[in-house]
Image (cartoon, rainbow, N blue to C red):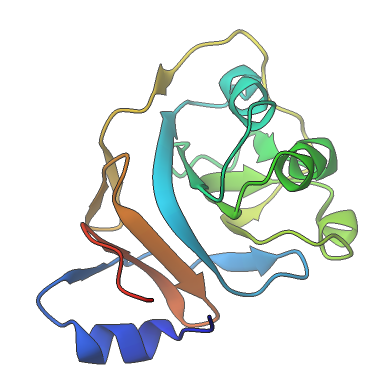
Length: 160
């Protein structure tokens, strides 16, 4: 089913929270949605890899990197894991790399920006806990919808 975040906001004004971050889009998939899984990390993507190596079952991985643009939390190799393991998309409050390659892949990624420097791999961070940025609390199990207009979240599925 196709959706537009603008239409979902109009149809469900009391159920939708709008993330006030101006994300850039990467990958050939411009719109995606699914139940939320979360990570909170800072300049370290070991938990991102570990999570994307597992079956995604149509979920969206929300990575709260604190908005840091010091190191890339997702690149083409992790995007390939997301595709291969059935993740609906990735939202990164931080940086990605390999953007030209990402744009050729059948994946949807939203991120604040890019940097060529890879992340640390110490495994520091938190998995599947509520995390917030852009005025929204991202809670595991809530629903995220992303398209060219932005990212919205609802405690309930808003389609189908």
